[in-house]
Length: 236
Ligand code: 5RP
Image (cartoon, rainbow, N blue to C red; front, side, top):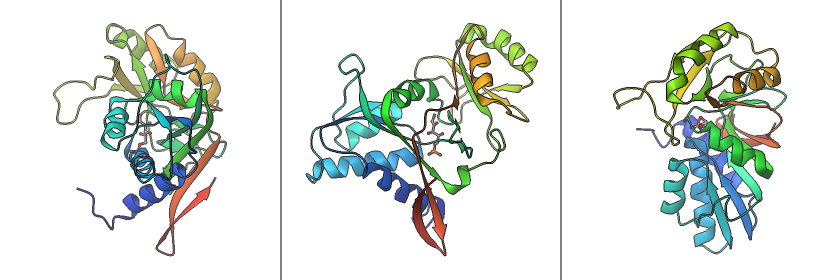
């Protein structure tokens, strides 16, 4: 369980709240996945319930986001009902100085990429520990793949210079199964020199649904950090 004085938790809360403050009444909001975005969803729900915001509809990027939105009273819609998203709020696992992201720590990157890419304004919410000079420094690159293609995709990822491993469940026997019923291969790349090219090459492998490189998608990155022990939010 996380301590309420845990600095990581405090940074996530602050940055989640800062992102929720960007949402205006009468808008369609992409609801991201993960522990940081969960705070943004909570604050959005609070603002709706206390009347500071009106007429918000969320488009969830995962089952987790859908559950949280319902819990905090945010009405939901779908991309069948609307063809635009005003703003999306979502976390990331790594952010480089060009605002290129690695996402997919929650195995939700496929739906996240659909929603975040469609948003007029995509706001990334991270704590300062997510900032890296080189992508792939701390986090493996997630690749969602249909189950029957796992072995050939693993071999192809090795040929691209990666070290792939199938993501296994925690407190669940066997592999992680995504909200779409697929599997996730996490890939260690020692040096992601050209993220745009790698994103395309991986997505061109037959059986791959989507990978966690988000190139040119993020509009604004809000970073939660502690300055002299006090939580602060800054724009990257
Ligand atoms: C889920 C994601 C998350 O946004 C990412 O893993 C960050 O999560 P957290 O805020 O819990 O660190 O990409 O697929």
